[in-house]
Image 1 (tube, rainbow, N blue to C red):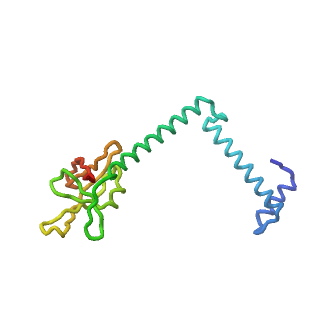
Image 2: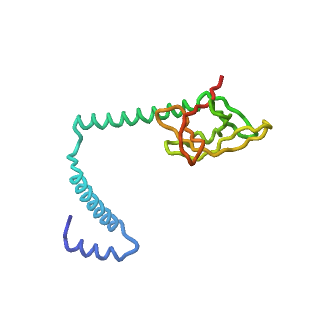
Image 3: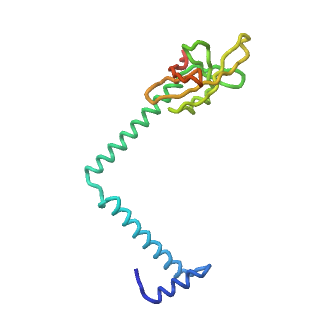
Length: 171
């Protein structure tokens, strides 16, 4: 960086202005860029980065990225299998999936199926009453696991015990 006395005076006068000439703008940008480069070199030295990556480092990075991609792809496939080719029931204006092998015929709103993760969430399941046209609602805890096609449901939100249930297939 230049320490010429005219530039020092110039820098002091620039700091008091509100509008700048093209030459002053270039001077400011050069100084900011120089400070950024100094900070960047200091960060690289602290991080231990030597410069370009070796072939081994490139291979390790590519392997990690590939593993991450495969893991994400597997999660997306299982998520799709949970709801793909499942029978859709319509009650009024809403569409539902039906769980199988539960003590009652429980239905879940299709829109709610995409919001699940490995953290339990309170969701409303619906079931038919004697009148067949009326749906009652029951709040349960639902979560999913990345390795399973099933929804893990705890019917009692206080005494949490998850059991896996899948949706009814479309015939």
